[in-house]
Figure 1 (tube, rainbow, N blue to C red):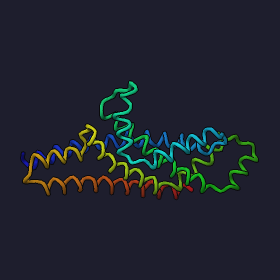
Figure 2 (cartoon, rainbow, N blue to C red):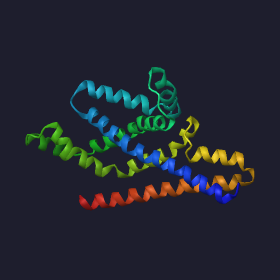
Figure 3 (cartoon, rainbow, N blue to C red):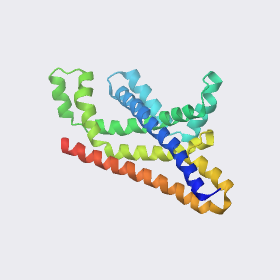
Figure 4 (cartoon, rainbow, N blue to C red):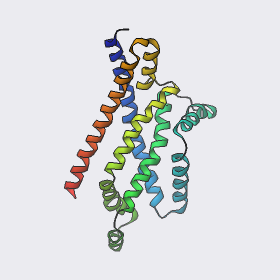
Length: 214
């Protein structure tokens, strides 16, 4: 295969990687916010459930999470294509890191502000919406960006479970084109690097804008 065709093939595979990353960012962020809310609301069962979920999944290797989702769910009747399975596994795993990052931001909110808001008669829901979550969001942009960059790289595990994303296609191209092994690996690594740097720059831009709005 000509190297130009290899470039196009790997580039197309990165579209799958990017799609999986973007979808997971959205779903993992939503689930992470819900876990954070559950962990800080004064409802003991919610707090304990969120804490157990976060600690168990966060400290479980992502590969095992993939195995449980891809091979475990069909055993109880949930049969999906490999891409949704990969999306679900990455979401369940990444959400725990999002939740921990967001919780650290919540803990950075001044206690005096929370007490003052409570003294004004704000409910917990109002506190979360108008004070706690907005302030927490302002302090977590750098670590959250790191979480999302780690997610981008974690999508490579999906290749072992039937999803033809960038890493999986790279392996196929290496096996089929032994004369271009180094070039293929450098190309793939370079695209991963460019995407990671782009996400980092976007995170820096968001952080600067957030600082200006304080």
